[in-house]
Every structure is written in structure tokens, then in C-alpha cells.
Amino acid sequence: MNAIDIFTIAPFLNDCPQCGHGRVGTNEKTKEFHGTLDVGDTLYTRTCRCGFEVTIDTKDGVTKESVQKKIEEALEAYKTPQEKRWVLDVEDVNTIDELKKMGIVSYVPKMMDDLVFVKTSMTKQELLDIPGVKSCRPESVGSIFV
Ligand SMILES: [Zn+2]
Image 1 (cartoon, helix red, strand yellow):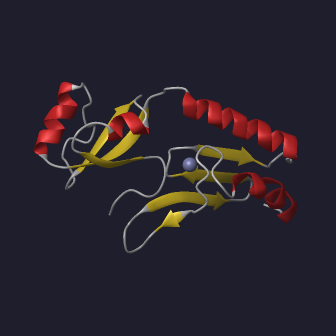
Image 2 (cartoon, rainbow, N blue to C red):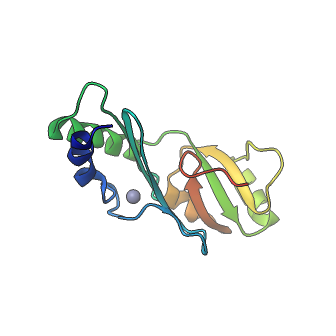
Image 3 (spheres, rainbow, N blue to C red):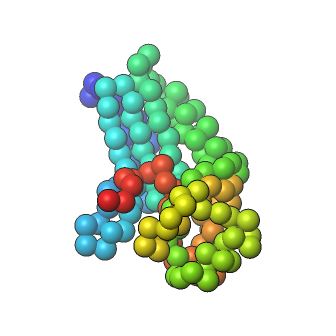
């Protein structure tokens, strides 16, 4: 990607347009996930710990206006409930039962430690409000656990 395109896009996405969080990467010590920034040949992808994500294709060039439009669309998609894959960090097996009662079932048959992989249209806040759910993050951002 050429520098002009990067300079056009970057100011809009240094801070997350949804929550204002300005950091990316994962803290090695605490494993706290902030978000990702991926600049490829033509694709500029920014994700955030809040679940926001946007990909801007610079193949046909970009303008401030086209970047803003793309971000507005991504914000709209963020607000519209849609089924997403989440990784939940849960307290214990009781939490799993609670999730099952709510109709939220893991699509990874075996639990990995205390992690549950679910597909749901619930928002991050709604998931965090479930007793026993310690944290959650969209599966689409960041790497899968190794
Ligand atoms: Zn955010």
C-alpha cells in the first residue's frame, strides 16, 4: 500500500471510531487484547477489543470521503445485531450450564481450558452480563489460542 493511502486512512483509525481505544496488539504479560492493525498490499484492516472492525480496500484509491463512508458502514454493522463468533472466558462448568440454558451453545465440542466458543447475535455487553463470564472477545480478531 502506498504511503499516501496510509496517510489518508490512518488518522481516522488511530483511535477506534466506536469506543475511542487507541492501542493495538496484545500485552504479552497480561494477555490483554487491544486490537489489530493490518496493512497489506491493498487492504487496510483495523479491529478493536470492543468488537469493531473495518477493512478498507485501496485497490481503486481512497479519499477522505470514501474512508469516512466505509467507517460509517462498519459502525452501522457493529450496532446491528448479527451472529458473530465469540470466545468467552468463563468461571467454571456452572457457567457453561447457564449458557446452555440461555440457548448459547459452544460450537467447539471440547472446551479448551475455560474458553467457550459460541456463535450468537448478543452484544459484548450482554455476554459480559451473564454471571460467570469473565471476559469475551470476537473470535475474528486476534489469533486463535495455541
Ligand atoms: Zn473499540
